[in-house]
Length: 109
Image 1 (tube, rainbow, N blue to C red):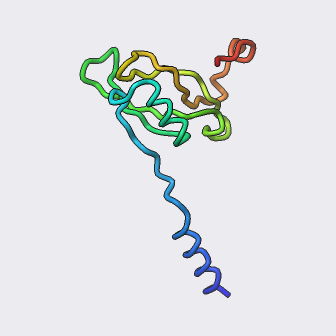
Image 2: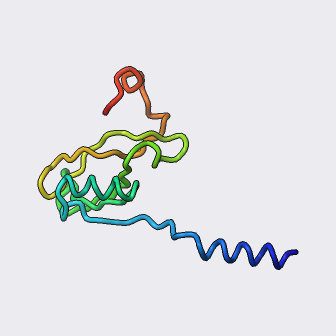
Image 3: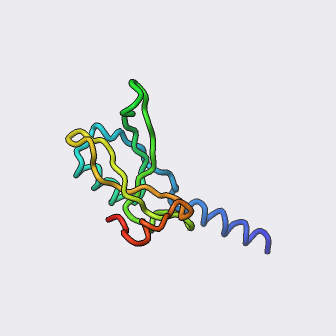
């Protein structure tokens, strides 16, 4: 019985796709291309230059919508610099503990 269960788990783990997240440099894409990649893959990590500190690179996870966020998180509109725009609108996940009354009354779209 144990062998059957172990064999089943081995087959199952070999057939499931890897849950790796793709990483990209936002400055190589236009805003439309970056948004298309995020929507296609549902969640990606983008690398982009910092605005306040020279020669510093920042990384963040961007998502297509709130369904790509974990439980207890929601999709919050943020902005990502791209090749053609300094403020491409995208979404990141933030904890629901960060919600304030304004976000509940006037949700961001």
